[in-house]
Amino acid sequence: MSTAPTTVAYVRWFDSAIYAGVACQADELSGYSEMESAGVLIAEDDDKITLAVDRSLETQNVRLVLCIPKANVREIRRFPATSSSAAPSGAARGRRRRSS
Image (tube, rainbow, N blue to C red; front, side):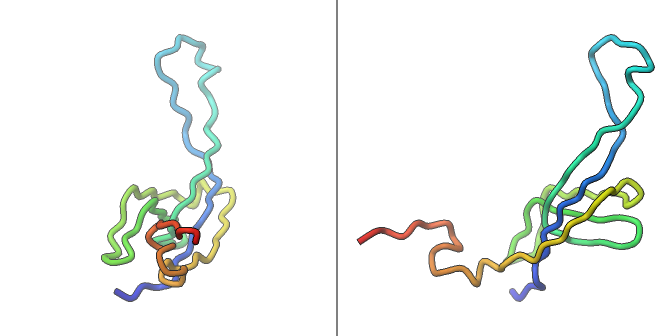
């Protein structure tokens, strides 16, 4: 199956902080969590960016998808990825070459 060029994205963003199980004062619970995520860029528009950890090159099915609101994004870096079809024979399937 033919695929569009793959782009990998790194996103630095913030999310609400979640605290559980430890007794503390309310003012200690304020704030947010600084996050960083990376994956195959599968969709992006003015409001959100969507990343997948895995995507099948044969079916284009994706797994482990994260959609991040752009209102929470501090930085996005995009990188073109080389298709596994361009890798040397055997390398695309993770095989090691035997030494002679």
